[in-house]
Image 1 (cartoon, rainbow, N blue to C red):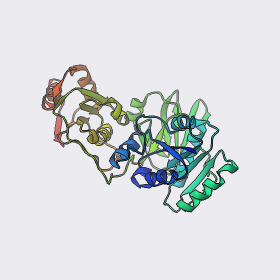
Image 2: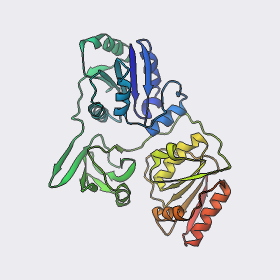
Image 3: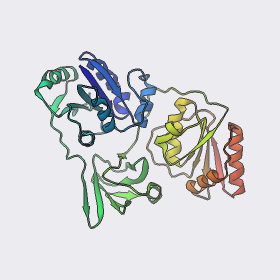
Image 4: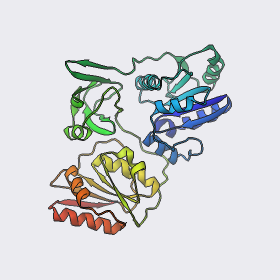
Length: 356
C-alpha cells in the first residue's frame, strides 16, 4: 500500500509526533511525507528530519494532498492545532480545497486528551487501518465538529469568522499582521478587497496598508505565536562577503528570497527572517521602528547581524529609501552596514544600532 502524508505546522514536528506517526505508518506500507509551510520546514530542519519529510517546496496542504493523491492509495493529514476547534476547522478547509476522492485520515492533536482521528471520504476498506490507529495512538474516531470556512456577504461587505482565537493574540492575514484580538469571537470585515474592520478585535492600519487587496474566502489566517521556542536549534556561522536581498514585510518568504545577506524591513519580518535564516548562516540587517507583535518566541539571529531601530520615520519609509539607494553588488558585511548608515545619515534618519 502506498501512503501519502501531509504534515502541517511546527508543533506536530516539535512534539515528536510527526516522526512517531510516520514510522508507525511504515508498518502498513510505503510512506511519502510532505510539508510546505515555512515555520514547519524550519522545525523539520531543527529536528533533523529532512530525510523523512520532503520540504523541498513551499506549497499549501491542500496542494500537497492533491500531489500525493496521484500515487498514494490513502492519505494522512497530521496537524496539532491550538485547540480541537481550530484543528477540525483546518482539516475541513484543507480537504474541501483539495477536492480529492481518495480517503484522507486526519490525526489531530495526538497525545492530548481532546485529540482525535477524523475520516474524510470513508469506506469500509479503512476499518482495519482505523483499528490499527486507535490501538497505537489511543485516540477516538470522531466526526468533524466544525462548520469549516465561514464566509458570507452583506451590503457589499465580505465577512469571515476566525475560530479558536484568544484575547490578546495577533492576527495575521497572508503573513501580514493586521490586528489583535480582544475577544474570542472574531470576524474580519472587508470591502472592495481591503480589510476595514475586525469585530472583536483591534485593526492595525499599517498592516492593512501593506496587505492591500485580499480575498477573505481564500486568505490564510493565523493567530497567536507562529512557533513556540524551539528546543533544538541548528544555527550556522555566517558569511563575511556576498550579495544582498531585501525582504519587505514578507517574512515567511525568506527561505526562497534570501541571498548571502538580507535586509529585512519591519519588526515582525526581522524577527521571523532572523530566526529562520540563522539555520542557514545568513546575516541580516533589520530595519525596525519598535512596533513588534509577539508572533515568535525568543527569535535567534546569525552572529554579527545588526538591527537598525529608526527613530523619526516608519520602517516602511526607511526601507523604501534603502531600495532606491542601495547598489546591487557584492559586499563585505561590514561594508553593507556602513553603506546603510551612510544612506540613513544622508536622508536625516535617526537610528539606534543594535548588534546581535
